[in-house]
Length: 128
Image (cartoon, rainbow, N blue to C red):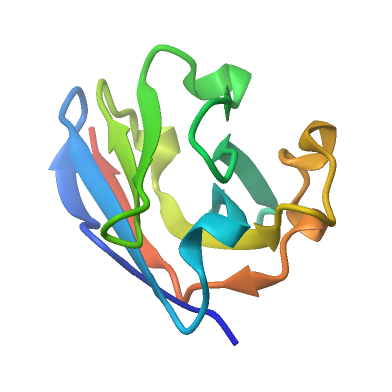
């Protein structure tokens, strides 16, 4: 059973930057595609970014294109999300998630239901 632990959230002013990390354990990290999702209070869980198991393909939500970059280091079992030009509407709990690379088509990597394992989330708050 894979365990995912996010870190790096916090309070930042609008226009600022944050770098999130997600450390995986309990499984072969390069067996999994990875994604970042976020959920604001009272709202659905939204796709932020995803990356294939080998890092060769990445996907980003239209609302965050140009402001986020997803990456991974398979030698460190770690997923990253670099966020810049943050806006108050980016305030949410950010979750990392994993799915089995042989069981999910890349076209589904933006869908929350394609992911099997989830972290507990890290809070990001952007003040105006």
